[in-house]
Amino acid sequence: MFTDVDETLTWQGRLPVETFQALFALQQSGIRVVPVTGACAGWCECMLRTWPIDSIIGENGAFYIDRDKTGKLNYTFALPQAEREANKHQLLQLQQNVLQQFPIAQLTTDQSFRLTDMAFDIGQDFQMERSAAQRIAEFCRAAGANAKVGPIHINVWLGQYTKASTSLDWLSHHNVAYENTVFCGDSPNDDSMFASFPITIGVANVEPFLDEIEKPPTYITNRPGGFGFADLAASLLHKAT
Image 1 (cartoon, rainbow, N blue to C red):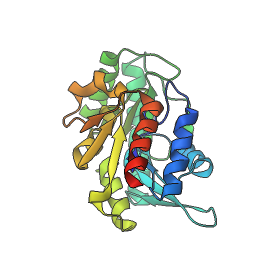
Image 2 (cartoon, helix red, strand yellow; image 1 turned 90 degrees about the vertical axis):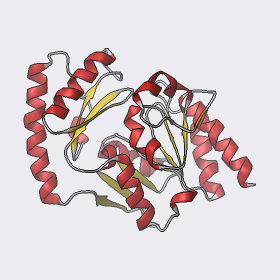
Image 3 (cartoon, rainbow, N blue to C red; image 1 turned 30 degrees about the vertical axis):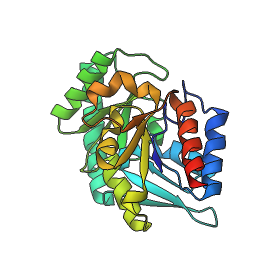
Image 4 (cartoon, rainbow, N blue to C red; image 1 turned 45 degrees about the vertical axis):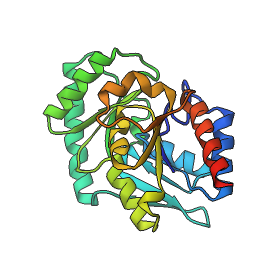
């Protein structure tokens, strides 16, 4: 089971106890949950070390991390190191251009923990109109970067990878059948995932963004965020028994 994190597992910035219990129950039943997130490497390591999960895909597909039986974390990157280093220099220049062009733009507080991308805060510590966020994203795309507007961040990166392409690589590496996979998400930042898997679920708060998603989710939960995820987990666990 692939799942987004922000406002899919969380709700209003917090992880409901129901979500954590659902993650634990899914793991105990043998259903592997792999978060697929725009979150920085630092956050990914924290989640992987403290949540009942064994793998995570971070920074919009830049890498996946597996935790082995000894607790060691192992990174697999979508791009080779030389390309990542070159992209990093280009992103720093683009970052300066964005901040000069859009005085309203603010980098996320976790920027220093990012390995491959940059992110602008639009709904976490700083609130921005979605129209302004879209203008910043379009500016980045015009400069040749990828840019996705999620519920709380604009994620910007260089390189031909997405959440979906790295998720498919993870499936292949771990010998997991594509047809045995579902995805749960909440925003246009998940559009590649919604388009790439046969069964997809949106938590209820995806509804305001459906016009921005090329292939909307197959199903939508009744409750938002982590509460909707918990309902989905309960349904999957019921079918598994």
